[in-house]
Length: 346
Ligand code: SAH
Image 1 (cartoon, rainbow, N blue to C red):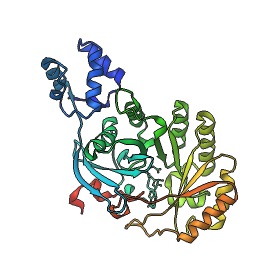
Image 2 (cartoon, helix red, strand yellow):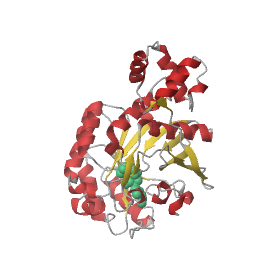
Image 3 (cartoon, rainbow, N blue to C red):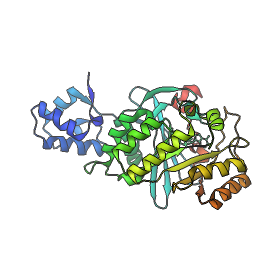
Image 4 (tube, rainbow, N blue to C red):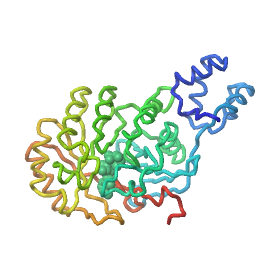
């Protein structure tokens, strides 16, 4: 059985090469090739042909194929559907902002969190992505589009903290000076609120930005739309968020998708403001993106504005998130099951 070489941390690659009787500087040469997008050992022209052949016997190099590429006419957002080695597909979205190009990557094939408003969870979890497959989404989006990537958000399909170890290895790889060298402060990770994993992440003291998908300030509402809340309620979640801030010094931002008649009342805004008071946290209001399979509808623009005013009047900064790529179904929550199952499902 061949091994996935790009999922190895540099220390591990070095160790395995030493076992093969190779000098340690070879590990760095190979790492650099992989992180520039080499797809075969034959491209690694500064290695002997004998070593290239030995590597090829032990390892494989992942390289997703572009199954589909859609570009928004409105804002230049590009959505990729990648076909992975085992035939599964995942989506990646490249957004072009003034401050740089941002890729939104998927962390799993499908998702088991079951949020009522999200298209990505409709078919459940198929499997978690390997570190190489997380990295490839950044690397091959940059290579294919010709646009340099400066920021990463883990906000695509899947729950990144439900794939904790692989996501942590990916962060090490993408952050590495011999690789893509993307700084932790340019990386955001979004979670539906897996409390024990938030605690574990805090202990690592990374400088990344943590976003928590809150979407409701009370257990009754949150239990309805986010099953994850049933095992661990809002109070415990917000306590973990405060502890995270105390340990890392990094403020958390909260995502709040506004759903008509569900979580958008004046009372909900006031309760949210009181629960977040004194945390210095920021709230991103996102008008819900309509998902075909769901009866939930977005709040009106006037309602979103009113909700924002209440938060701000109580000292909580809140912005209304601009939607990019809606003409290609690339907005939050719209990355679709049919895409993951490939063309057959359409
Ligand atoms: N599992 C992670 C990351 C993926 S979802 C998480 O839950 O945070 C990225 C964001 O899109 C989350 O805030 C999610 O709640 C939100 N989202 C999902 N479906 C949506 C929809 N239909 N409209 C608006 N936002 C949605």
